[in-house]
Image (tube, rainbow over the protein chains, first blue to last red):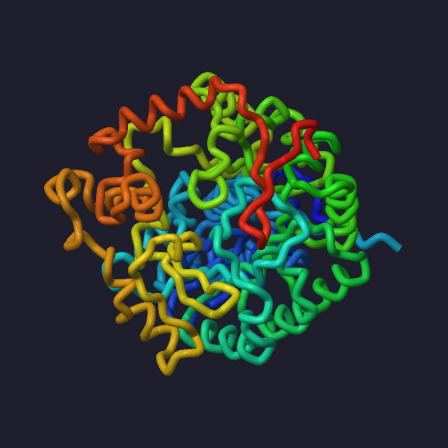
Length: 103
Length: 397
C-alpha cells in the first residue's frame, strides 16, 4: 500500500515518489518528466536533482547535506528550500514517505 | 546543471510545471505525450453515455496482438510517454497482459481504464507483474440499485468494489472514475467518501459530454443548472478538505457554459487515439463526423506521418478552417471554436461554432432545450450495444 497520506515533510522525512509517479528522462524532448496518471509534469533541474536523491533511504536532511556539499551553499537555506519544494509535491499527491518494512 | 544552486521558488508549483501547458505542443504539432488506445469496443456494460461511437467496431475488425505491439513500439519510438488502455472494455481482450508487458518493455507508462467487471484477482496480479502503472475503475453510482441500472449490468457495482480492493492490495494506484448526470448527481458526496474508503489516490468527477450515445440519452441525463452548481460546490469543498489525500479532477458539461471548452486542446494539437480497428483519430468521437477519411495504422503511413500530414488531422487544425463568428473572434486561439464533433452533431457542420459557445447563433435554442430536458420526466435509458441501442423497459430492467 502507499505510504500515509497528508505527509508533512520535515528534515527527518524519507520521501520517495509513489508508484504511480515515475521520474524519467524524455529522450525525444530532452527534458526530465514525472509521469503520473493523466499528467506529465516537467520538474525543473533542481527538483530533478532533489528527486533523484529521494530514494526512500535518505532523509531530507541527508539530501540537503549532499546538495550543500555539492554546491558549496549554506545548508540551512537549502534545507528550507528542499522542504518547501517537497511539501508542494506532497500536497499534489506526488510524494509519499518510505515506511519501515514490516516483517 | 548550473554551478550555483538557484533558489527554489517559494511556490513549488513553479518548479513543477505541467508539461502540456509549459511546453505546449501547439506550435509544432509535436507528438502528444499521451495516447488513448481503444483496443476493443466489446464491453459487458451498456452505459447510456458511453463515449464510443454509435457505430461500434466489431471484434473481427480489431487489430491483432502483433499489430497492437507494433503500434506500441512505434508510439514509444516517436516520443509518446503514456498510453491508456481503454475500450470498450480493454480486459475483454485476451491478450491484454501481453500488450501491457510489451508497452512496459518499450518504456511506456501504462494506465488501464476499466469497468473492472471481467477481472479476476489473478489476472489483475498478472497485469501488475507485467508493469501496469495505474488502474482507473469506473463507478456508476454509490449503491447497487442505481449503479447496476445505469451500467445495464446486474452485479457490476459489487464486483467493482471488489476489484478496487484487489487493486490496492496489489499496491497498484487507483483512480475512481465517476461519470455524473442528473440521475446520480445526488450521490456525489458519497462517491467522494467511497473513493477515500477504497484508498484511491485520485477521483475523476466527469460530467457526461453529450455526443454519440449520450446525445441520444440527453433527456434522461442532463442535469439542471442548480444541480450542476451544487456539484461544483461539492467538488471545490472536497478538493480543499482532501488536499494531499485525494486528487479530484473535474470535468464540467459545456452546455451551461458561456464559452466552449478547448476540446482535446484543439483538434490535432495535443491528442490522438487509436480505434479498435486501428484508425488514428483526433478524438474518440471523431468518426461521428462524416466526410472525413481517417487513416489506419494498417496503411502504408507511419503514425507520425498520419499525425503530421493526414487530411483528417489537418482539416480542423489551427484557425484556417474557421467561419464567423470564430474566424475573427479574439478567443479563436484559446478555445479553437470548441468541439468539432459537438458542432457537427448539433448543427450538421463541424466547421460551425460549437453551440456551447454563447456566440453561436444556436446557443440560446440549445441551452433552453437542455434546460427543458433537465426539468423533464424522461428517465428511461437507451442502452449502448452493438444492436444500435436497446430502450430500458418501463420498470427499469
